[in-house]
Image 1 (tube, rainbow, N blue to C red):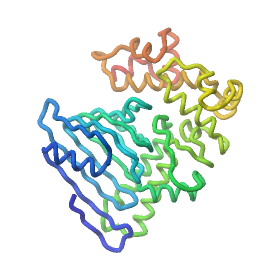
Image 2: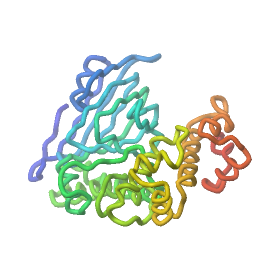
Image 3: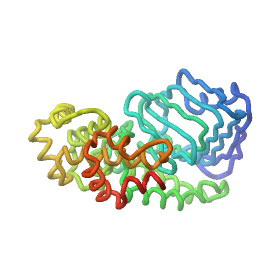
Length: 328
């Protein structure tokens, strides 16, 4: 990738783009950008082509990836943190474990461990933050004492947090795109966007609890077991789990789990699980069509057998009936 290097900035800004229609060249590029194993790129039912572009500096960069084909493989742990969202197409990360199906225009953070992925015919936007930069800020905030930050990639992000993220991204993007931006201005943009990653996406934290970040509720510092319980609920919502399973995963008694959730979030484990499953139904209906799915089928897949009660709960949570979501 050709680079345009500015002067007077540390690290220096760069801009580059690569595009083509050769599968081998694309494989070499993506393996260099996202080291891993078992990369498999295939042509689908239209001519293969790809485009990859990046602009920014060594601390924070904005990237776009467009790929007319399918891409599968396993990404290794890398010295950076990546937030991405689809503009179009299909993508699933952490296949076979804590799977997350990416939704158009909804940012998610990549797993902070090795993970499998499966993408097809997609256009994607990404924000890369170097590990050194983000971890330094996380230490300054008191999120960690030192070293890596563990993000809970499968946990949802509240709408208020997403609005803040989009606002910071909108305000910092012009600076990151400008290779001639003054160094101090660029450094401040890098800092703001990296902090927005920490403030938006649930992670194992000290002063900023993952539960608070995930659900937008104030939770006392050090609530690690409660964070584990919430993470377990999100990761296993598709399974027939009970309160005892959640308590055991978090090393809490059933009563201890109930009390902790009630104090922190004013919900019971059962209610929180139902809310998570409603969110999954909403996500599925949002990307489906009446030709490919039914409200009843999606609801039953997530454990809702009484469609009348389900519809009422759905309307209360999202302000519309599930059939409206499916048709929109």
